[in-house]
Amino acid sequence: QVQVVESGGGLVQAGGSLRLSCTASGMIRSVNAMGWYRQALGKERELVAATTSAGSTTYADSVKGRFTISRDNAKNTVSLQMSSLKPEDTAVYYCNANIRTPLSWRANDYWGQGTQVTVSL
Image 1: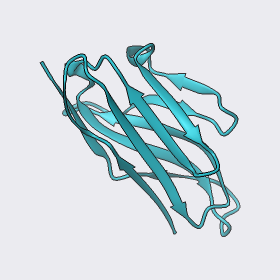
Image 2: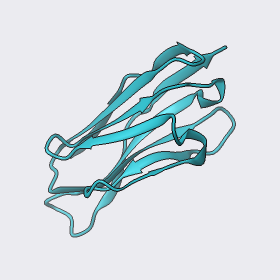
Image 3: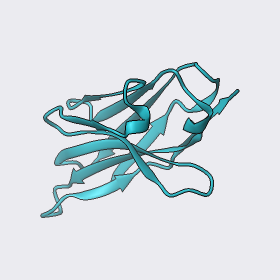
Image 4: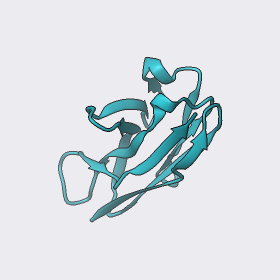
């Protein structure tokens, strides 16, 4: 089994910062891309930022320059440093990891349970 667990959400005032962390654990053979998605109330889930095992990163236009994704391949962790937060960043943030297990010939996407980020005025 594989577990993906996030931490670090909470309530912050506009302009503030938060750091989200995510760890993948369990029967893992390899981890490919890891990333963060978010889903605001009444909206579809969207990609916030992602990183490959080689270190390439991609960001949603709405967070470029404000959010930074980082990864520790040895620990199977990914973090999202969020700065200059805006009320429109309010959402449930989900960690995603594309993982290959010893029992599977292909990698699959695994999701965390989500962590709430609320940005107040």
